[in-house]
Amino acid sequence: MTDLLALTATLVDIPSVSFDEAALVAHLEAELRAVPGLTVDRIGDNLVARTNLGRPHRLILAGHTDTVPGAAGAGRPLARLDGDTLWGLGSADMKGGLAVMLELARSVPEPAVDVTWVFYAREEVAREHSGLSELFAEAPDLLAGDVAILGEPTAGAIEAGCQGTMRFEVRLRGVRSHTARPWMGRNAIHRAGGLLVALGAYEHREPEVDGCQYREALQAVHIEGGVSGNVVPDEVLLQVNHRYAPDRSGVEAEAHVRDVLAPFLDDGDTVEVVDHGPAAAPGLGHPLLSGLVEQSGLEVRAKLGWTDVAFFGEHGVPAVNFGPGDPTVAHMADEHLHRSTLEASYAALRKLLERGV
Image 1: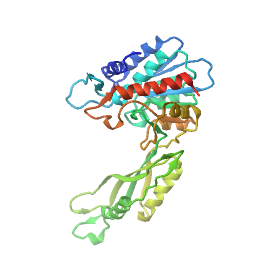
Image 2 (image 1 turned 180 degrees about the horizontal axis):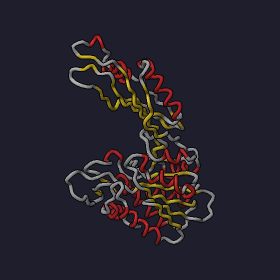
Image 3 (image 1 turned 90 degrees about the vertical axis):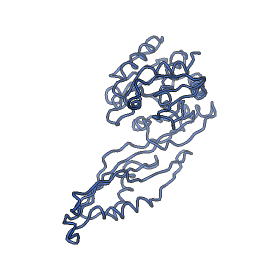
Image 4 (image 1 turned 120 degrees about the vertical axis):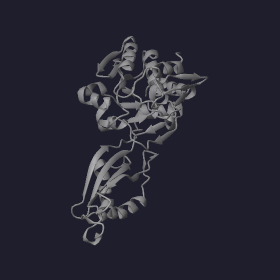
């Protein structure tokens, strides 16, 4: 078998910051086109490679090719191998996952399931730029499948589904006046106090969905207001983020937040949803996903953040996160990847490809 850590180091040494992934995509494309039996399509900086063996199930294995930028003034970050540990930008998030995908595509020529390999661009930036979104818009047939596994770093555990995320802009109105005569106005910033106290005391839910326990949250994440040092402000803007479990729809989650905010709103105040990434159910009932868990005895937990599994969930494809690397070191200056988690992820996925359902 190819040395997976060395293969990951090769990928780390090809810079691929968001919007600048072309060199890495060209490298992966050349590797995939050399694999017999694969149909390879490139759309922009996105690659889709597929087997067409007539199997009864199709598994999608997907991963993003981009990384966050390196530290300012640090120069081009290069991979560094130290025993069984690889150091370098993107090693955990998620070039280790890409290495696993590439090696599986090359080393399992006759899988028990048909496989769609998806290498997509621009995951580390705003959802509107996502290469996965681009693929669903321009070539949805290429992403048809029964289940999807995203190679995000999970330290070799299954992180099922994902939370939804929703951001609101709340504008509270006041009446402008001179600070020497505040009784002639109404201070909008002061009005925010009661709402902030309520958010601080918010009682979150911890629902269990398909055996996975999620934890919801409602947080003020930004506030701004004020005109001048001698003016009672007539408006304050708050941004509020809600993380909700997949037992609620986006409509239900929005209604819940509006109910929480309602006691603090008056005529003229506004609440607007400015960003929404829907939740995705765990989907562990599908035999391919339950087989992955059972065949390798994997730990299963809820995904408490939002990930691209939601794109697949929106299109009716159950999806989970499963990949090598410690998610807590992603994006950090000392990002690194250990050989053991890389090889364990490879072994579990290979077993699934060879055995199927």
